[in-house]
Image: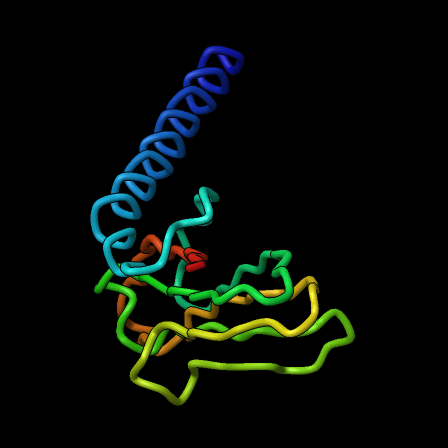
Length: 144
């Protein structure tokens, strides 16, 4: 009986996770991709479902002489205080949207380098309220 309950729990959890991932991917394609225009999406889908108080990072290579846009997109239920930081390989903060109303950064790279992009969902929900997760996407676009 324990094996049946354990197996059923695993199947239900897997189905829920797959459904969340699919919903986040759909949200990213429908709501976030248009925000990159006139930049061309680099083809990498970087999205994740996060709760308030969580963060996620990715490392991206940026090539010299190229114009880029890093675009943050987050579901409304996470609030409007979601932000991203861009950090060099040696830990220096290059850019942050933490105190900005703008959720993107347009820039040109002088030297090819790897940059770490960290998305932060601040925990601004009072303890008595139920925290809701939401989809967060970081998109990278370029222009010639």
